[in-house]
Every structure is written in C-alpha cells, then in structure tokens.
Amino acid sequence: MRHDKLDRELTLMLLMTENRRYTVQQLCERMDISKRTLYYYLDFFRDIGFIVEKHGTVYSLDKSSPFFTKLFRKVHFTEDEAVTMRRILDSSGSHSAMVEHLKHKLDSLYDLNILDDEQLRERQALNLSVIYDAIKYHRSVVLHHYSSPHSNSISNRIVEPFMLMNNNNEVRCYELTSGMNKTFKLSRMERVELLADEWEYETEHRQIYTDIFMFSAEEQMHVTLLLGRLSYNLMLEEYPKAEAYITPKDSQRWLLELDVCSYAGIGRFVLGLYKDITIVGDEGFKDYIRQQIQQMIKM
Image (cartoon, rainbow, N blue to C red; front, side, top):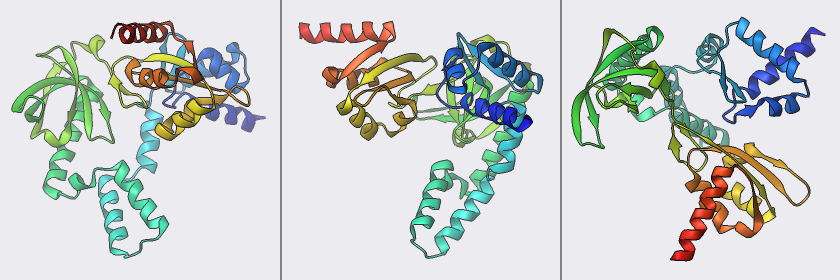
C-alpha cells in the first residue's frame, strides 16, 4: 500500500539526515531492503529536489535541500519569538520542572543574550540576510571590521560564505587572503557587504564537523569498537551522545560505531580501558594506538 511505501521513504529520510553517517550496506540492513531498492529511493529523492550527498559508500541528505529549508521555517521559532517566549517564562514566576525544561531548551537553541540586545539583533539580522543571499547566489562578501579574539585585531575579511551554522549565529567561509576555511561569528561583524564577484574557490570549500569528544575538523575518520560492560557504562556516563552510535552485540558486549574528527579523544578512552575494549576498525586508529603505546614504552 502507498502508506507503507511512504513510511519507508520517511524512515530512510530520517536515517539519511542523522549526524551519524550510514553506508549503503548499513542503510539496507536497517531498512531491510535490497541495494537495488535503496538506489531506487535515492533516485526518487533526487527527482523531487533533495540534494543527495555521496562520500565513498556513505549516502546522506543535505539539510540545505529546499524541502528541509521550508520545513525549518514552518516549525522553527524566529529569533523574536524565542525572546518573547523566554520573557513570558521568566515573568510567570513558576519554577516547575516543565517551565525550567522549556527555559533550558530555549537557552540551548538560541543565544538569547545577543538576541535581547535590540540594536545588535537588528545588525545581526541584516548581516544574516546579506550572507544568505551570498550563499544562495554564490557570491563573495566583505566582513567589515570583523573582531577576532584569536589575532586580537579588527580587520576586513573577503570571504566566500557557503554554510550557516549554530542556528545562524555562525557562518562557514573560505577566506581568500589566507586560502583557508574558517568559521566566523555574526555577532563580531560590524557590516557585511555583498560583492559582484562569484565564487572562485568552490572546490576548496570544506564544512567542519564536531565529534562527541568535542574535537573539530574538516575530515572525519570512522572508528568501530567492541565494548565490554565497564567501558560501555563509562562511555555513556562521560559521553551521553554516544548512545546513538551503540548497538548491542550480545548480553555482555556492545558495538560502538561512529565518525570522529581526531583519534585523540577516543584514543584516550581506549588506552584507559584497553582490557575491556576490542578495536574492530579502522586501520588508521589501530596504527594510532600502536604509536601511542610505543611512545609510552619509550617514556
């Protein structure tokens, strides 16, 4: 029946928009479908306007696809709405669990300190509008008087913006002078000027990822571990987000499979609990652990 097919399409859509990236084989196993059927669904997604991304054997749906953009605008609160709701909750005088939960949820989704400053909020909204157009039409911009705490300077930056991040509070850009991809905060921009120049370095654009160990990078490595009960419990206690990447192997072991931006975070965890963990993959991570052990022996 059609509703069964729709259920599968929506389930696959959810899987392909998770932070965890699934291979073709993993998608087929989770959906209980053949590769031929999976490719049919992928073609269908492309035909109706979704951006299907492919990295090796991993497929995902780009969250900037038109459908997601429209859905986001329908169900997501505007910045003004978020500020208004926070003020209503504050003035209610209630300290119930539900009210505190709603406050925490709003605080985690929006930078309300910035949004509550009306002048700053208007400037940021205008800058966001210019950046949005630059991304849409593949144009360069000038970030006038950008305040950088890293270099302790204020300067103009000519960049190619290509991805909004962190609830539109940050933008990922390729900076022409340094030839590097960088993340800029909208609150540190005095003014954004749209240029007539189209992107010249689109092939150099790289988005940034952050793993559950809080390491960030432009590339990710896939790691698979077999955890015993001790390492399983400690992983969930120290890194609650890991739960989404863990599946039971049997009554005493659990499989952790996830992408990381650096071997350092997960390596520290493995070296501390090496008796309770088996490294299944990848080879790069195995080499990293061997090198760490050799360095400790020399010390």
